[in-house]
Length: 247
Image 1 (cartoon, rainbow, N blue to C red):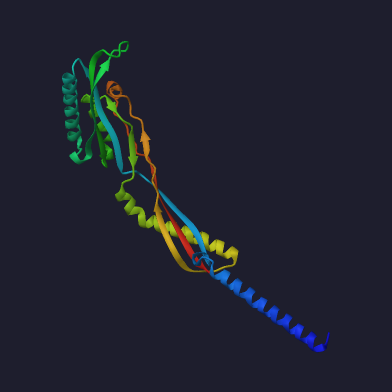
Image 2: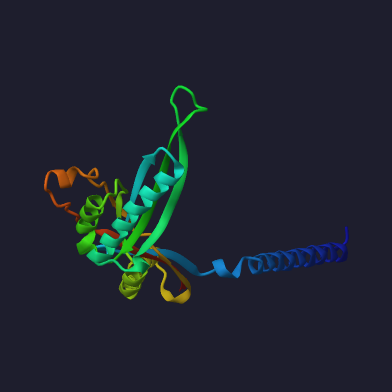
């Protein structure tokens, strides 16, 4: 092989290698451009804050169930009892807006041995009370049973939307500070710097609803005892999710 042929072959190889390097670089650049923009140079962190508060809202169900030989008698007797109960509840201090009829029913009662034989009729009626007057929950229970109510549902205490709204700013600040503190710690350990915030979102906590069983109707009255009620505490929380820009 002549020197000229050898030189030409060497040049061809050099050119081919150069082309291969350029193509490889172009491929790597194109691959980097295909990466999702929102995952480049960002760091996501969750923050959380909570506060223990005394619930400001109580819910309780008050009702009566009676039996009579006819549907008409059962319905009328039940209506008389519930009218007396509602009148007592209003005398105690409840407003119409705090009372809502939740259940009304008149149904036959069958003989235990012969399911085709009607032996009586049962009438049921109950009202659901939702109030912020927590100080009268005990008198509500006692007054209702004294007026003839014999169905008292479990009391539940919860935090109203108004109270949550009042706590919202404080909890958002606490959750945001928690997210930032954790993000700064992680950034320091990764040897990166937080330079801004790309996105953020918040989520309200559900809040804990506290339930109490109520003494059996008539039991407290028979013993001359006033029903004690304590609302305890409930948790109101807030969480945030922040995407930080890092470099």
